[in-house]
Image (cartoon, rainbow, N blue to C red; front, side):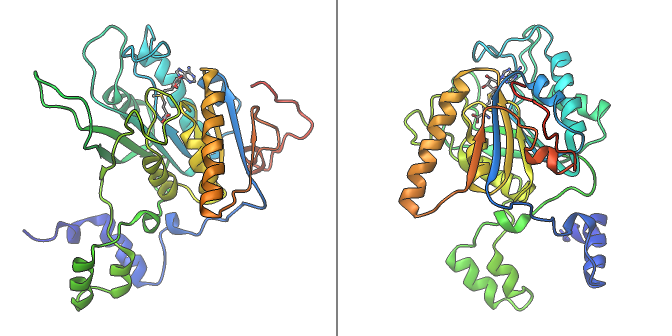
Length: 328
Ligand SMILES: C[S@@+](CC[C@H](N)C(=O)[O-])C[C@H]1O[C@@H](n2cnc3c(N)ncnc32)[C@H](O)[C@@H]1O
């Protein structure tokens, strides 16, 4: 079968631009804005209250791992899930910048429980009521999980990646996977391939094989649905840039805050459960050990409130100096 990418209008357009020495608007170099330490607001509050306090088009990346009302925990209970979800979905779209990306975790686990939701119901809502485009449906494939006898044991979850506009930011090079030695040697000899492209590694594709955290994993802080740091890292690296703002309004274990610090992004996160503070504390302790172990040093500042001079307001040129925004 022929290479279908040769007939893909997106690829044809990008190649034509490159031949003319030009770049697509989404490839324009973002202006790095880290001058000193990165700023991290980590609040205990409701997602909708936090969202309402954020300026329009101020966020580069939203990492969103919502509760689906499947009684996983006390926070996972809503009478009318879809109505609730549409409130934060609309706000999320409003706060995303034109280059912004929105990733939503979930599965297709809807089992007709009254009021429950799943990723499919969110995608259907987005298709009907949002201008964002679905760029990829990423399959997170994990080798470990529960056994099953009445159906095939589940080994994947989905991550829907939506972009705010066609100018969405995407840095593939930060997440390429190195070829194994034998493949690399063979590709280096292949005259049709450019050595610098081979050196960069391969596109990790939209199927990501990353192990789920086991109960005794060193990363675990005690949250029941904590996502692996490697997974969040790949998202943050490819869909945001240093100095940009990462938002996670279902913060859970605090892993997004930790990755934002490590990757030199600013962040705004929240969770309705006050245990969030204790989880974050553990994340910061792990960061400290990492700094000692690897001789690294992260320059960051964390606040339990969203201060008026957090870069989320500065980027808009609307620093709310003097205005007390504590206790959002
Ligand atoms: C699926 S978990 C997120 C897990 C997180 N991604 C991680 O890797 O640790 C969903 C989180 O949403 C929080 N939550 C539920 N309802 C909320 C609300 N209305 N506002 C903010 N957080 C909420 C829960 O406390 C829970 O920690």
